Length: 76
Image 1 (cartoon, rainbow, N blue to C red):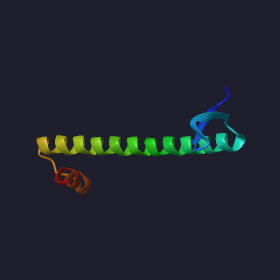
Image 2: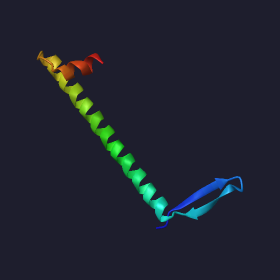
Image 3: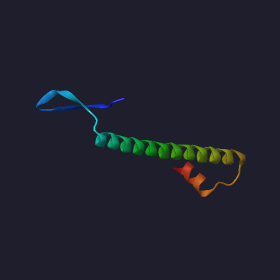
Image 4: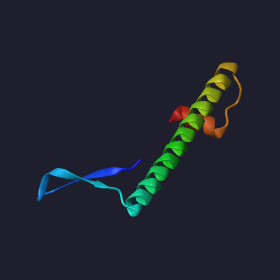
């Protein structure tokens, strides 16, 4: 499948369609992978925070001592 890009400039205000060059494809792939890596890191951090919060809640209900991280998650 060929990827295309639309280029708009003063000479072509409605835009012209061009095929991706090898450089465009490589750049697109790098940026896509960077985005996926950042998304995975964000999702992992969100899951870790939710797990820590749930652990703190469970310990509070049971009357157990909290770790420093669990206490911080409640205070913040």
